[in-house]
Image 1 (cartoon, helix red, strand yellow):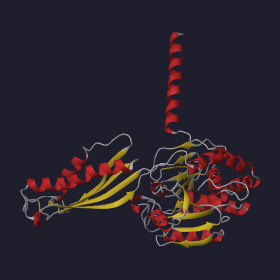
Image 2 (cartoon, one colour):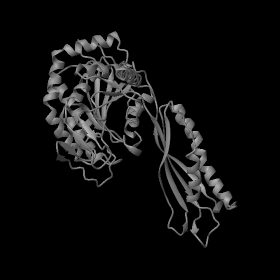
Image 3 (tube, rainbow, N blue to C red):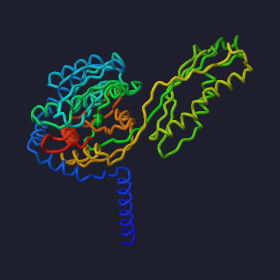
Image 4 (cartoon, rainbow, N blue to C red):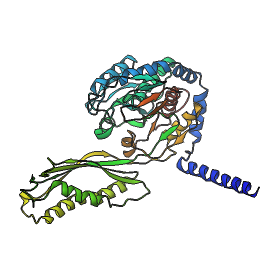
Length: 441
């Protein structure tokens, strides 16, 4: 009996700790009276209920769109064919001023009354898969398999359903809504689509990125990253005949060992890795060239710059030590280092109580789900957050797995709920003419 009481008390303590941990990891935003009032009206409006019903009934069309879009390859930097298809879809749905910009983004506007803010709602066109990848979807055991079927083809399809819902309801918004398919979210795309869009559009009051599948999660903090390509170059030569000259690979190795000893803070989380190494000619050659790719990340732009300032000088130190090892002083025979920035995703933060966060939180509740704020991540929202534009990333619905792998899969279970959430989030941000004022300012 005593053991039972002890175990019961222990279980209660662990449960309390778990709840406290969850609460700490995902604090709820403070919902303002303005937001509460707006969503009370939005939830009760007959036109909104019609929109939610439409999206649920439109689920099959949304899934068909998803399967059609994923079959159009969109490798990094080669998204044009998919972009052209998506642009035609936006035009067919009646958006105004539909165009493709100089970077390859496609977007159009659903105008409001002209008396409110303009917001961006976007999903990314590109995938991580190289040219030549077979992206034709295959259905098996209730799931759809295709490279990119979830990330972010689902997001693109979800936006089309949301636009159809606006058309079906005829809801007149106060603010303008820009619906977009953007390029360059993945890998070395370096958010080039978002960078170009916000360079050319200075009047965006809030940004909603649709990526991932979770209907409940809201990402509102941005993990920044800097990526560098570092190349060591030397004269090279025969492993036996030219022995005594410095090696590019050896210099790289010396530098890598130094990088491995760098310490970073646990809070804010700051990381680094040398992801790939290449170089050399053959087993019996002194390497004339060696290259590495370095990734550094942090939830703080300040800490990102600090770890960068620690790591970058180590590459020259590795070259200097390799040159000194062989007593080389002739510049023509020395190892040199070239450091090139190939990725710059800015970090940034905003209050969990920001109106854009509150809107997504309340929208999640309107559709009957329990919202959760997630830890910082690297998404298209990084760019607007970094320049002070309120922004979030929310999911597109369904379930998925093996993202970024050839056997990526998607399950359409309850998938319609995420487009419903997107729809209701937008309504809060731009306002409904004669009903609510825009929460985005």
